[in-house]
Amino acid sequence: MNHLQSAVVPQLYLLTNDDEFERLYQKLEAALATGLVGLLQVRRKKTAALPDGTATLLAEAKQIVELARRYQVPVVINDDSALAAKLGVGVHLGQQDGKMVDAKRQISPDQIIGRTCHGQVALVKEAKQQGADYAAMGAVFASTTKPKADTISYQQLKEGCQQGIDICVIGGLSAENVGALAGLPIKYVAVVGDIMDLPIAQIAPRCQQWQQAFAKWHAAAGDVKV
Ligand SMILES: Cc1ncc(COP(=O)(O)OP(=O)(O)O)c(N)n1
Ligand SMILES: Cc1nc(C(=O)O)sc1CCOP(=O)(O)O
Ligand SMILES: [Mg+2]
Image (cartoon, protein in one colour):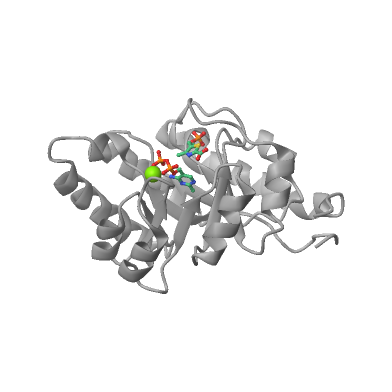
């Protein structure tokens, strides 16, 4: 592109953590009620791994989808296209989570499909070609939620942002460190720990702090050539 970006301000993309469900629900309600969450992902790795994981995850996800609908926030299910199709919502697929073509067949065309691309621009290009709505790049910083995730470089991210597909960043992001990406044309900033690992009373104020961090994006946009 090689021109100055000015219009793109990211949306907050909140992912669930593995909290006990009742507590998680209260945290999600606190976050969604702020009106500052643009997209919500159901990522319940511990629930999914239970012996009755499929049924429990379905019951949890149903409640989360209903809650999010009340706040008109779109939902994405991690890993599981069949569950997403059953609930009429979107899906996020890692490289090991099945083919995009199969997900595209299952998921309603008005729902979001995201694809993990790590730091690999070739995977970003592939995600675009296969019809993903966004390509997720990360980990941007070391993540306590996913300590084994490799970190990517700023250059990889910058190149990813030039591929003509919405970019989502993920991994180790906080309302304080996200400023390092300010000005890049990023569609979604995905967050787990920096919000979800806080006590319930701190969730809404933390969402506000994220909003303040995003408000600086415009000012920084003139500094970044992509
Ligand atoms: C928005 C977003 N980006 C990346 C991931 C990671 O997906 P994946 O690589 O499949 O790893 P798990 O989340 O399944 O552990 C994601 N879930 N969401
Ligand atoms: C689920 C996930 N995927 C990652 C990747 O790099 O693909 S990093 C990550 C965890 C994100 O949690 P936190 O915001 O707490 O770091
Ligand atoms: Mg996955």
